[in-house]
Amino acid sequence: MKKSHPAAPSQRMLRVAEEVRHALSAVFAREEFRDPDLHGVHVTVTEVRASPDLKHMTAFVAALGRDLTEAQLAALKRVSPFLRREVSHAVRLKYAPDLHFQPDTALGYAMHINEVLHRPEVQRDLDTKPETEE
Image 1 (tube, rainbow, N blue to C red):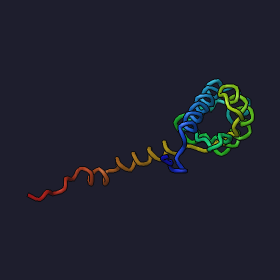
Image 2: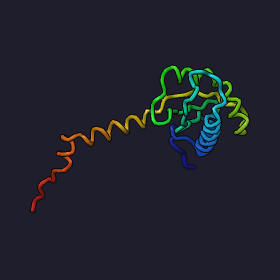
Image 3: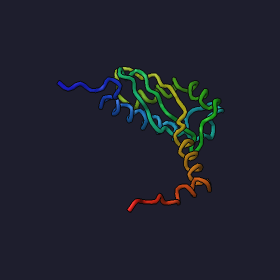
Image 4: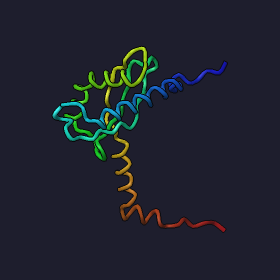
């Protein structure tokens, strides 16, 4: 019997997390919550990670093209009971998972790396060709 690495998510965890991501994205697209800190904010769910027992889901979120503010993250925590109820209607699970929100900083990091790569001193280093031995 082949054992998998304990830290690696199972196929079920990955499948359920993806279903939860789709359900959350649909709720955010409808913008049904009344929290003033989330008014007019287009929240993007980039990834959801599930706990092994599927009772906790961590959603990585960003505002369309930028990071969410602390106030917006706090607002997501405030509306999480509503979001949990909406997810439980969309995804059939034994238990409605607790939702936790984390800012997704991958886009900001990628933009920073892109900016660094386009600096003149880096471009100069990238454009120089190393001498090859013949």
